[in-house]
Length: 581
Image 1 (cartoon, rainbow, N blue to C red):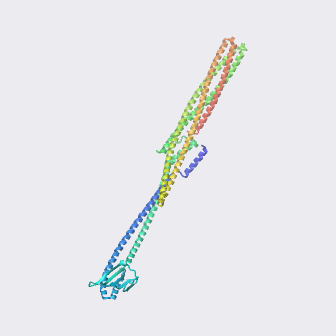
Image 2: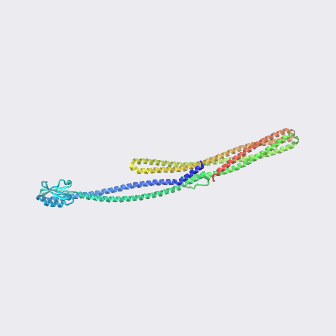
Image 3: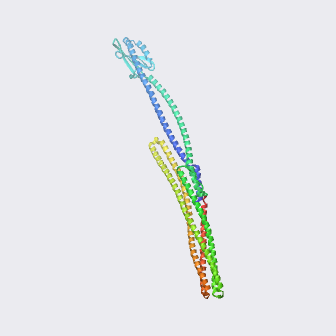
């Protein structure tokens, strides 16, 4: 992954966190949900209270009207009784007047009754049921022998009684009365009571509205306090530890790679467990890198020493080759100059001694190279094992991040189920029509909250994926270190092979030097055979020169391999230097 791109993505993520963090999203979602629920509860309670008050006032109004109706019925009964009393009095008084045909007295008497508010008309018939006298109000008081035909009278509101004189019927009296005055009074009382009830109902409704506003204000204050508490708790419990973990991983990937830092989180929850695992991982990686750094320095020193040994072997081989060529020249001159055989033999003995000393020195050097190669092999083996341990620890960190990913997947499933429930609630509210409109609004809000929860969960999942990417980057770097160590191991194996070849070559040189010593002895003992011996010496010295050439090639190869080993050691040191241990 490009470092510049990662840095830009990290800055964008930090900017997004500063704009709207997970704590704000979660607390705002919970606050809105609680506010909606409280609002819904207040609305439902207000509707129920209004219905209850309306029902109480309706029942009260009906009760008042029922009482007024009962009182009106009693007054109607009282009116009927009064009319009955009046008819008895009129029938008794009218009997004599009918008997005497005294219409003037009849009129004077009936005018006193017609002035009563409840009396509408009075009709007097003779004993033959023929009109005798009548008086009525329309609206003025009028009288005649009979009631006019166009006068509207309610026969149901009339009382008729016969008049007798000495048990002889002289006629009959009919009183027509009305209950309009009584009904008007009753209606006036009903109107006054209704107005009083309506005014009282308005007062109660205003009080209920004020109480509702107080409840809404209290609910808003409670929601605001709850949102602040949720933000504070989430910042303390989750956001700060996640930011600290993200900062450390970012520092490992993009910064100085400080492995001395630790997460200071002691909570007994999933984040505390993750922080503990991460601290143990950082501690183990720190120890591994310390060991790798120490082994790299050892490998560096061994490479420098091996290069010096290779230079020494190369110089010794050059010297031995030069001496061998000198010995060859001396041997060739021996066949032509017989007089200087003794001097040439001494010179040859000296040269052979020098060759033996060079061979012995080369044997010691080869042994040192073998020891250094064995040490380098052990160091690279330990480095490979430590790299494997570091890779295993990184895998454990990846597994812990996967566990957190499972938790975010569970939260995502819950938000999806909540969204599905909200959709079902919306469908049911649509089926309910107008009555389910408010519930549909709440269901839509719940669906929006479920979406916000899913977005917040996706944000957490993205952070965890960032941790996983950082972990994968660390695994890749450890694998690169492992490859470098394997390459070092291969070079050490190559050096060991070269050392074995040099050991074989050294043995051949020793054998050749022994043969040369025998040849010189034979020259001393058998001067006569000096020509043959000189030829053998020349052949042996030629083999020594070939072996010296082989040693030069082997030492050059050892020097090249030691240079590669030194370069790999420096590369390993550079990789380790990226981390602060």
